[in-house]
Image (tube, rainbow, N blue to C red; front, side):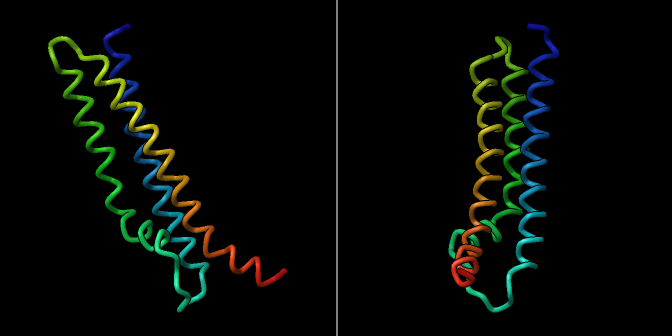
Length: 114
């Protein structure tokens, strides 16, 4: 494998996690504006809303761990692959969790209209 390919893969994984965090932040903003005021939100929705700003730590950790594994003398491809995989999985999980958490309050609204 060319020496630049692992770095490109790492930077792509970091970019995807930043994009996922940005998506969740914007989705939280839009969804919180569309819910009527005074409504009690489910616990998972409150957790996603409160902790979405802390999710930006994940891309920083992925970048630091990835650079650590790239700078090692032997290259440590297993550690780098695990770091990249965790970045992709965490981005996917974070997006799915946010969408699910914000759709839970809407289930009651749909049930009222039936």
